[in-house]
Image (cartoon, rainbow, N blue to C red):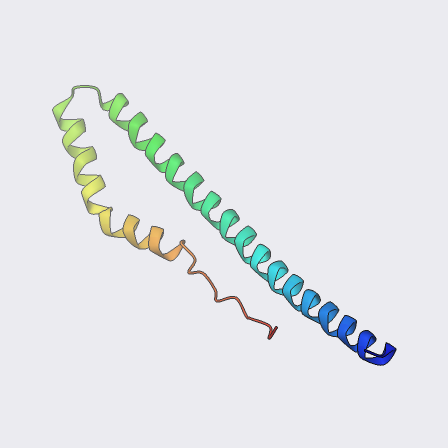
Length: 99
């Protein structure tokens, strides 16, 4: 193998490494974005659940208050489901750089 062939081989391998690093960087960026999105959704859900628990505790054993809270929660089932769905990002496909 002459020097030109050896240099070409090294250049080819370096290009391949750079393409893989680029792919890994894109995948890491996508993962980081998804973790942030999930964290925000989880924080919202925790706030919502804690709020419901506090309202149930505040209602105590008063059947009128408990029924009102139950009715309110049932009325918001679809809104809650839609909000969770709307705020749960769909993963974006990672572009693949030819290796």
